[in-house]
Length: 287
Ligand code: HEM
Ligand SMILES: [Cu+2]
Image (cartoon, rainbow, N blue to C red; front, side, top):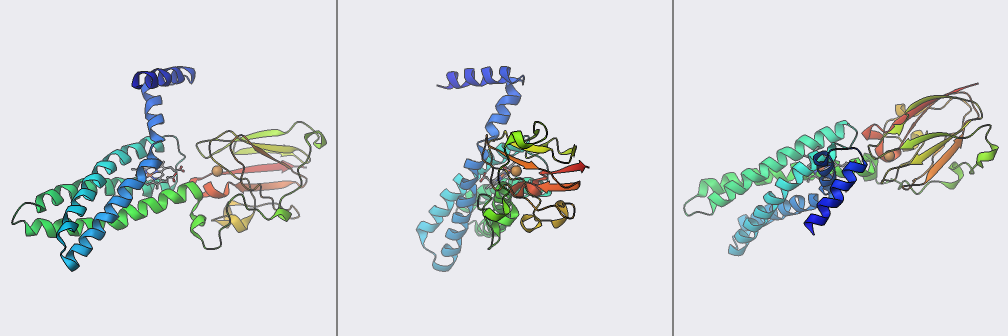
């Protein structure tokens, strides 16, 4: 089985003109999301067990927290490098940088917690027990913050807002009717939306009446919008006076969205879920 997987990987890396090891690292990075739940849940579970042990002193809670710490630290040690590998294919942003370092700190903390936990299980080690608990309770907010920011990178910080609308749920009246390609003066100008959370190209100059087609060539859902109501930062979007705001709603992988520009001026648009990842573009429409 492993041999087959390796052959498939090697074949892919040759096709993509990328070295085998570089390809392997990039591939491994995709296992970061599925691994993240383990250290998050297990460290919280260990902390809860310790809180209950402090209050009720039940013997079995000591064993429960020990087991959670062992698994939590081992899975953190896997999750952190996978995160670093995953970050290679992601655009940079402050959220990613905070996530990277708080996550790395939490992972290192988990290893220290495992050490203290094992030491505290030896007879007459009250001091170790206290240090173990302090570090464990400090690690919980770190791991929660890391998970929170991880979700923010995928769905956008706004996804945590009470009144958030999923990218797919767009007010129908805000969506311009689809324009047939033949109606445009020329063939549409294509901008792709990639796995790195970028619009390619992100800046361009076109002429009034031309149509732009955003193609989602990635594995994620993206959006295209000039609507300040959905932007985290209103300064990231703008449209010339007289131009209607547009919002594609969620564009799933392999789908596209077209917009014809009928008003001259500068348009600044964003992908709503990935605005904080720097996914934005600018189109200058000349008369
Ligand atoms: C124990 C530590 C960590 C935890 C608990 C954690 C947790 C998460 C979570 C919950 C997600 C969202 C996954 C999803 O639903 O798709 C995520 C995404 C991500 N994490 Fe981590 N992470 C950790 C460490 C790291 C580190 C050290 C890095 C290195 C830079 C990193 C880089 C990333 C990247 C690049 C993404 C994807 C963002 C995107 O798709 O836009 N993570 N992480
Ligand atoms: Cu996007």
